[in-house]
Length: 78
Ligand SMILES: [Zn+2]
Image 1: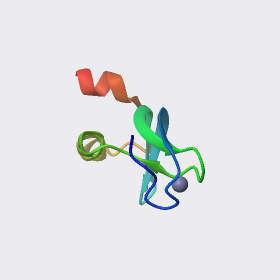
Image 2: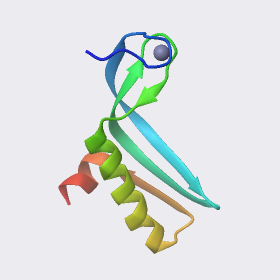
Image 3: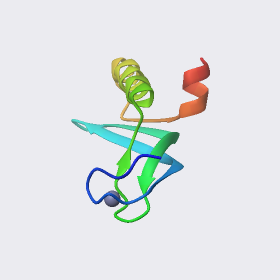
Image 4: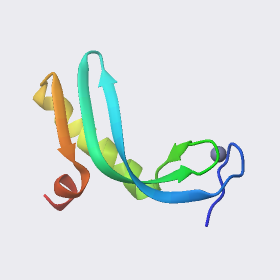
């Protein structure tokens, strides 16, 4: 198990909500597999997850809706 790069605390696998605000366009991705530090609460993602998040955000950005809420598992499967 990796340690937190900020405080060397223990990372625990959790599903979290990723949210990004792109000049007023808000994208919310639910149930993202992530690693959360049990000590300081810092959230990190694996390289694979980061790639997927970038892909999802890029995709949703084109749609230009003010607010998009998606489920990570569902968009990955699509
Ligand atoms: Zn930490």
